[in-house]
Length: 166
Image (cartoon, rainbow, N blue to C red; front, side, top):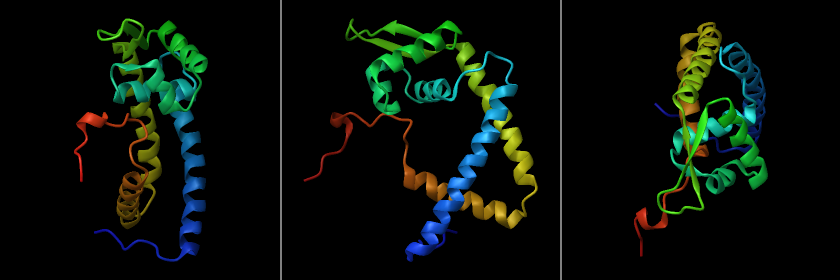
C-alpha cells in the first residue's frame, strides 16, 4: 500500500539527504561488485554505456551521446574501448550507411549478468540485516522513486509512435 505524498518541503529535504547518502554507499557497493567480476574491468562510464546499449539495442552513437550527455569524441572513445575488450560491436545501419548501430556481444551480456549478480549479492547481504518491515517499506519507496525518476536509460519513443491528443 502506498503512502500519501510528502506535503511539507522539510521532510522532502530530509529524504533527499538520506537518498544522497544512500547513493554514495551504493556506489561503493557497486564498485566492489565490479572489481570482483572475472572479466576485464570497465570504468563506471563504460558500464553506463553497456547498460544503455542493453536497453536500446541498435542505438547509434549520436543517440547514445544524448542519453549520456557526452560529446561525440568521448562517446566514440568509450565505445572504442568497449569494442577492444569484446563487449560491444558496431554494425552499419541498414537505413543510413553513415551511421553505425551498437550491439552488446555475448561477452558484454555475460559481463553485465556477472556484474549484476555480484552487486545483488552485496545488496542481499546488507538488506538481510534490515527488519522485514523496513525492507517492505524500502521496496515501496524505491518503486515510487523509480516511477518518479522515469527511464533515463531508454530513448524516448519516436514522435510517430506517440498517441496524438487534441
